[in-house]
Length: 544
Image (cartoon, helix red, strand yellow):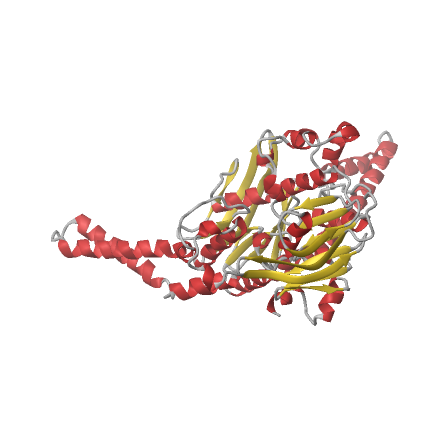
């Protein structure tokens, strides 16, 4: 259906990837994987036609519809949510109007024998065939079903899109893409802006309704649920397996072990042969044997072992200054916006060193309570910080708050104070911004690279209360695992807002559940909480 042939991308004298080729077939569901900065998003843009490769080409049949959802959306408009979503069918409406106009022209013209009249008839016939081949759609019902599935309420339909945050606007764009029923759907981190219930709905849609799908996502469960094929971009090459991501990792490990075994055996044989040649090359009785072995060495095709990307983030939080026994406590805390109650009567005490998860549906108050703890909003009741509490805060949009006009080095240089200034280059190297990468402008960084930079800023000042709001958005799986280990080792208090069950597993020991205008405390780890609630996974929180 879609073919990528010999794609090469070079910029600033560096090769991002070279001479990669693959085919996307109908019903393929491909996970595009690789570390941040490997070129995944660039490859999606090339497949979508938004960017041209340095070499190579992308080809597909003439009528193929390709839809692309980027990580970040910058468009503005003045339509309602329903009107904007209905734009998904604008091409069909335009086609219908064109057919009507052409038919009207045919009825008024009298030059029946002319070439132009015959061309007009052919054009109408071709357009009509195309239009009526499209199955009949109940546009309003489809729009409604899709918007509800992605988390909008009916009350939202007539609200202006300008009233919604970037994450909700991204959902509108996703709705438009899904309604178009494209031949190939390209999604770049689609789950970053979705709550758990909406992720579940999207999974079901992609599995049961979509045609070909290529997705970039850090969400291991999402990727494993929807994909049947994995293409990994690493070290400028691709590895393509007809297997979901978790199975692919096993297969790749086996493949590399086999390659290494073959390589070692070949090297041993070459060494033995070379030794024989050197020992007997001047011996007359062995001349024929020596010549035979020389020819054999010349014909050997070297066994190649797949290169492994050994670059690794080194992440360790500074020792936490000692705080009071209870860094955060709440007494009858609550919040309303006008007539809308978010939550109320929240009572809890978080002990020093505890690691807590905030879970629940979007809009139930997780980020609101975080803002109350930070002292950023007025609220009911009391939310009290303990003695000597120093907060480190990572917001959902932390990466987007970086000054894009600065370089990576300038970003850190501007905030580093004291002895740490002598170690800026070492710090940047530990965060995989070594050498020339430290002089990149922030605006050219990938979403994951910006998140890494934002995390580095967080490390520059010792804190004893870390509050992280969806910290894994835009992080590749390897970096996410490294962050998780660093948080496990952190000796302060942790509050993390996340929908990611894998990330929370082994990290937190207590769960605060947000829902039905309440905050409920559960003294279990994430799997204990799930068992207690008799749920298969966190998605079921949304349906209770």
